[in-house]
Length: 258
Length: 322
Image (cartoon, rainbow over all chains, first blue to last red; front, side, top):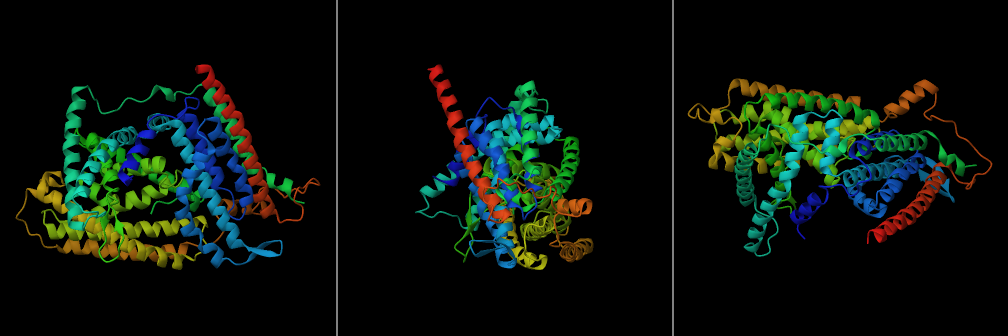
């Protein structure tokens, strides 16, 4: 399946929330707190980061998404992390501790720490995207004080991403049908093709604008009503805040140490 | 160049987030003042276009690899700097939330590195003076290449600074820069050539789409580079050099900001003193190894427990519905 087709599937799959049980404002608040907690753990203490995995594991199962799905998607972030972290074991060779006679360097400890941070942070963001849904998340951003222009822009971009990607897919298919198996484009052809897509997008924007004006568009898009805070949202925030703060500040690893 | 959450510390992420938020507020106010009533749908569709165009690769001659457009300078040339910044911000937010490309906490860093550097620095200071007010293919192409290279190199410089200030990598700043700058020079050249190709097509086919279309009408003026333009480019190059030297000097491999503050307060980088209960499960192992192993076991057990518990509840609900 082509990159464009995969993109279309991903765009459409996140339009609506995977579950009705969690609301977007509460999820966004907890995710931000969780990310600050994960990123504030010292780099040479991976034994303290690992406990923070409780949030993505429990929340993904509670919301019915499944941790395995979230974990597999979070692996996308690994190449970038490995690219930056791979130098640590090479450069920082000072011994951190011994395991069965084998010396483990500080570089490897920080490398493990970077990988854990990356995976957990990514899992939290994926969980937010999957459980909140895009339109509810826009409502949550507005409630957090995000400027109206940006929120409207996000909604527009998301709405037309599928349309423009579909148009690009048609052009790409037409090109491939005449391309005798050639996968990429020479720059001159690419420039004309993307330029053509740009002009078509521009003309479509003008048509979209006229259609919106005809339907009473006043410069802002309506937001989802599902982003109002309820007692359940407050309970959700309070519960996860307590758990995340406990996991961040209590040294639970000490239970395993002499 | 998308930075992941793992590469920034909390203080750096929050500081960059505050700066990016301030830029978004300013950009929103500037966009709200634009007297084009179709600006919002246009920005939305252009954001979607950049997103779709990133999926279409062009081949890089002689390397066997391919590249795609990033879009900061292209958007600025079509929409103007502030509208382009908001548009690129929306693309970055959606990329972060849908494709897990770049972290949520690192979003502030990504907005500054990729959005602000291209749209608010490279476009007005490099693209605009070189491209001039008259549409000429050669100059637009040259301006695109120069602006994309400068935008990406500044972004790479900031990525290095942010990662070093976060204390994440053991690579010394100078080596990190030597690793980042040449890669981004190559990426910038490809991005510039691609942006130039698209802008030249648009300029010839539908020139009113360009941001300064009103100036295009004033064709016939000299297309030569003015003295002012040359001064701007010279000042900018000197500024870039000063920034490079300053970042190399500032960045260090000291402990991160939070650790530093804790050590100032308590005399140690740990918040809680180590507790040594008599019931330790792995007494002979080092605390780090035992902690990681213990954590993994507990998390795995928790996952098993949660998945059994909630799947049963889910299947019971489904059965009730049927």
